[in-house]
Amino acid sequence: MAARDDLEQRLAYLNLDDEDRELLRRLGPLLEKQADSFVAAFYRHLLSFGPTRDLLSDPAVKSRLLEKQREYLLSLTDPRFDAQYLADRRSIGEVHERVGLEPRWYLGAYALYFSLLTPLICDAFSSEPDHGVRAVTALQKILTLDAQLAMEAYISASEQHLEYLTRELAEQSRNLAREYDDQAARLRRTTEEARAAEELASIATLVTGLAHEVGTPMGVIQGHAKMLESAVSGDDARWRLQTIQTQISRISRIIQMLLGMARPRRSRRQPVAMKALVETTLSFVSEKMARRSIEVDRRIESVPSVIGDSERLQQLLLNLLLNAADAMPDGGGLKVSLCQRDEEIEIQIHDTGAGIPERDLDKVFDPFFTTKPAGEGNGLGLMVCKGIALDHGGSITVRSQEGTGTEFEVRLPLPSGSPPEAS
Image 1: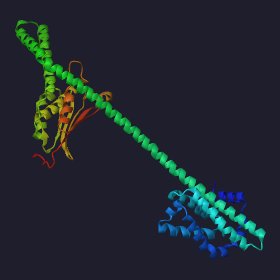
Image 2 (image 1 turned 135 degrees about the vertical axis):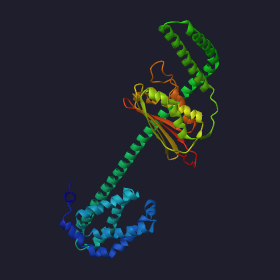
Image 3 (image 1 turned 90 degrees about the vertical axis):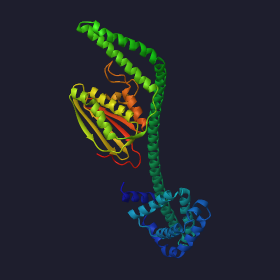
Image 4 (image 1 turned 180 degrees about the vertical axis):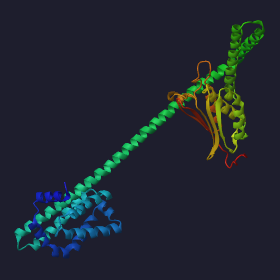
């Protein structure tokens, strides 16, 4: 409903007509003389109550209040019912809601003004009692209209405030729910890691106890198989003998890797020239890359040295490079980059192999998890890589998409004030 139509409907409902306004207008000169005394009486009354007295403790607030109250009193004798009238009356309720003054206090103010003005009207119309009664009624109608508008504005502002608080509470609830989910996920990961650590501890104990027991017969079998090479004939027999030796060697490597994890040596900490380390490690696998028609794109920059164990860092890089080569048995592209990012060294190894299914990305660093065919991987290489990165205060992450390849990113922290390496 338009503001003008709304106001007209309110005036009609209150039966407030032009004659009422004319009677009130006759009170103007008299009220002008009495306005200051009425405002003073109103102010003294406010000081009698704690909430209103606290509101008036600021001199600037007191000054504005007294000025506004005088303007309001004078406006009662000559009300101009227009859009500005509606805005002024509604602003009273909005201000009271903003400063936290409850309706009981400002609704009481309308009653107080009515009690102050009624004797004035009776004196002004002492010779015209009928007009006096009508003037009092007209005053009551205007005060009722003003109270309506202020109260509606107060309720509307309160509802908007409550709606805002409700939205904020809902957002906080969603944030708490997300935080709860994140904490639960982290707890699950921690539990899984603890369980994996327990399993590895059990395996380490088992490996430590059985390594020699298993290693000795494996060595004997390997030796006899070697001796049988000259005693067999035929391609099929030699192939079977070679298969025995290959699998024995594989078993021995797995045992040695497990034994190494069960009894890890203390890491050496010294400056490691990462550019030289990356280039040296690439040279180790260059022949394998060439055999598989893998083109290597080197983007190796001069970077500061990190503090760490060069042998373990080389093991990390070698594992990642060999994994990349295994992911491209029919050839492809390998991009190896080394650069500095803020206070860290960043190493990226990107292959164009088959990629890792999304469902497996969260498990690639788990012990004994592998995407390689049975017999071609033991699922420990990436777990070792993660352990080395964490041991150096760094991190390792993986990004992959089936059909487009995989990228591993290693970040290692720099010691403060590290100068860049020479090219």
